[in-house]
Length: 236
Image (cartoon, rainbow, N blue to C red):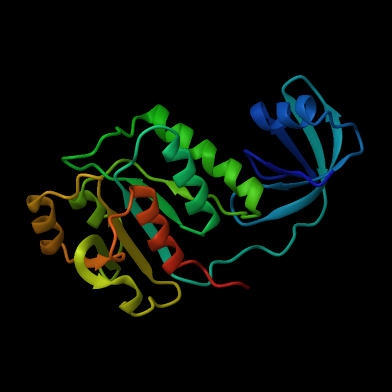
């Protein structure tokens, strides 16, 4: 058994505990037995080889070995502020952005947005991040930020961050210079109805550069993935 499982808290004294959905998945779905070997990660970049010690109804205890080398980011830190689409498209968006190494997803509040980022919705997005990390081998969780307007978004990142806003009349994304390693990139993706003239004026005032993502009109998640792929961390 080589499944990966998320730890809600880091191991202590050579032991770790899986709880709730993670424990039920291992115990009931995979029907793990004492002695089975798995991998565990806590979202901080660390991963441990582990062995099942005890199996309870909603809790599984693991004996963990030495941590594997931590995954460290080698590219810029990317924050994507996205006017969320509806329904299952949100889950797909979170899955792909996690796979591509995006550091933070911020639900963007816009005049023409169609989905509200409630606390329960953000909780679903966070669970989607964990599932995507388990599948793709990423050991750092993509942060799900609080909903933000363009104004409050600008305050989330350093003053020297590269600030971008998707717009058909902008500079081609491929023509943008690379961001420095360890620097910050923040990119705003609007709703399918587009940003309003007032929102574009606000973005201009806040130092966002307009960037074109190609000759076609993209859906929200396609636009976000295009930006994420442009600044995907390089292979180690």
